[in-house]
Image (tube, rainbow, N blue to C red; front, side):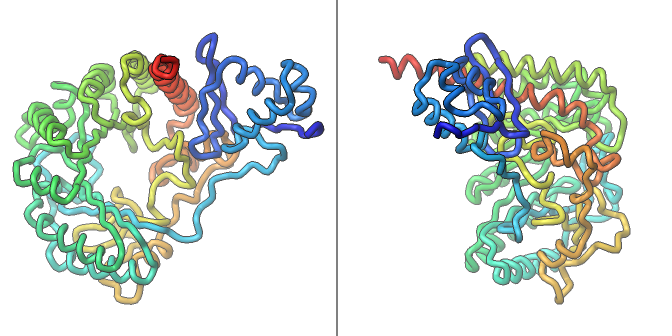
Length: 447
């Protein structure tokens, strides 16, 4: 023990948040985030890769046994090790589950200004024949690959315009997969303008969830998300969102930040925190955005979140920024190319849903009798592997995973520099949340 020399993880991030506390996280080890008191943090800072346990213990007038106990605690999540064999998240040999974006229809009742669907309103919904073949291919793949779970994100167009068809399909699909030992999780990716009691009751019965598009409060939302008539949709979306929450149906909100709704971001943050709904802020892809204003309004929104943490709001469970994975980490940004893809209304399997309407030699179809779904994914595109040398060396490479493969520039996320500012801030807010919980439970422990 006398010659043990602790080593700090090369992708370590740590910062003092006030006079008494700091945080530390190994950005290459999942769920390694820790809140440290000042004495613990001082010990961490004293680890220089050269001093052994004996000398560090002497520096702080600690027993070696007490120091080793603390260092062993940090080593469980590789904050430190007593050698340099730090692990990295690895891509599994094979998928354990599948995740598909299902394009239920090209039809939509809104005309959003930034919609990426090139085939919008060119055809109607997915036919019964395609849905039947989808179940056939799923069951075939599950049996062959021994998969235990599948997730559908039903999107479009507006998927709730096709609800009657999917109301018949979902129970059938769940039962067919259950019979081969696989569960099916289903969510609607919706503008939430078509909700009714039938949808609510069915969603509760079959444990469906909703991902709701919301770009701001009131007029800010209505600038980008209008009905085809030109009328804004916020009033309807707000009413329906509150209905889902009142029925305790799982729901999350996704906001696409663009130049039109930037200034409304702080107001939206207040609104979503008040609703206590999980939400995600994504930056618009494929078009320019004012970087200075983006940083300004994101910082203002993070300041609002910091205030909300002090009154008990659950930051780490309620907020996601873009595709970042601060705690779970990852080997790639999404399921595309490994355990998922996007299925168009005609049964075409694409790498990503933004490619619908494009000719691609790497596209497959679920009507192919020679290949199962995993084979199609494996033989398709693999843009997820194209990462810059900067990304491969970056401390945050397992948090950012180089961003969306389809929209990378020079094989990295266009918002790379912004992430370098906000990833530390994300962890700082998580530390303040952890500290608030600690302060809440301390009186109970003392009493």
